[in-house]
Length: 266
Image (cartoon, one colour):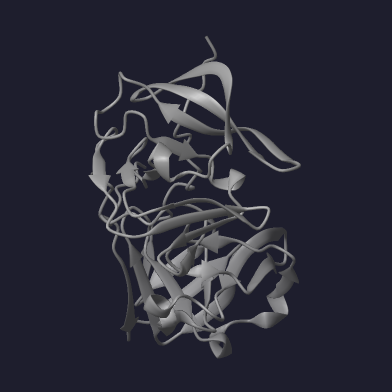
């Protein structure tokens, strides 16, 4: 049976460019790589943007030309190596060519992992830039939620905090007292979200027939916008059977990390 999403989809077209009305700073090896109030957003896929940094606002001598170009979705980019003292990170950045939007031509984008710490104003940002077109709401709901897997009840809660995020299925965060913890086993997994923060716990689930890794997570110290989910736990809709007020919810397809750039050396 085909799955029809019951949540808003991303609508920003690839190649869209907008100004960033925030101070953006990046650090590597405890040194400032760039500091700008003139950054641009560019969307290489509809899910979230990349930052584009003016060349003049990047640390002098930090970027070395690799003599290679990349054919990306919106035009040509020239690869750059990041070098700070003894630190060298090849392919850390690319400078946008003349065949891209004039709003970002000559600007530089960095691979997220090439920068150790990103800041919007004085707050650290994780995973990727926050999209100005993405909305994330945490709403208390008195609709009962039951979670099952392989016929086993994992949680049965009379209420939840619903997290509604553009482009993703609704997540149901439950009070821990309504979860069957005899079925859950902690793991060392830690993930981060630019909107919710860093997870404080992950758990695998054991039913009578199988073990499923990392099905449950919690944010004990979420971002201030998502404080209603602090200490609550959520299950992956894609991998369990969810019932809302006794009605089964269809499992959404697994969310895979998008490939937002394609590199072709020429």
